[in-house]
Length: 162
Image 1 (spheres, helix red, strand yellow):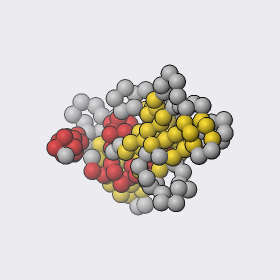
Image 2 (image 1 turned 135 degrees about the vertical axis):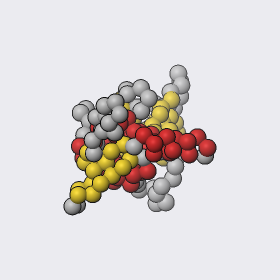
Image 3 (image 1 turned 120 degrees about the vertical axis):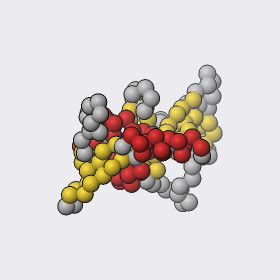
Image 4 (image 1 turned 90 degrees about the vertical axis):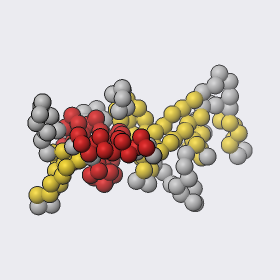
């Protein structure tokens, strides 16, 4: 458990422990929820993506050391496989039509989603994690990705088993 913020904006967060000395920080990103497409909050921390949720009781506060945080909200951050979050934008990016598998696109083009700059911060984990569900080509120093339906189905079957 950790808390962050100044005296007016302190929050309590329950998240996996990534930093043994307690000085770590992450970036809060606004991304589209993969099911609804609505804006959702995620925490990008130490090459891991965590989904943020918050809960608030009618009345509540926190004792944080010698300080009382009057806002009793509790935030939780749980690990999420980035492939789940990135699948919809990779699907859109290939511009698939009927039987055509779609186009290969560069990662920076795929991760440019208007109104959601947070995707661009996920470039390093997107390159690593999306290779399991994408075909990719290297031309010089550039990599091009295209979502592959059979690889996605295989990956989803594996996720269902584990």
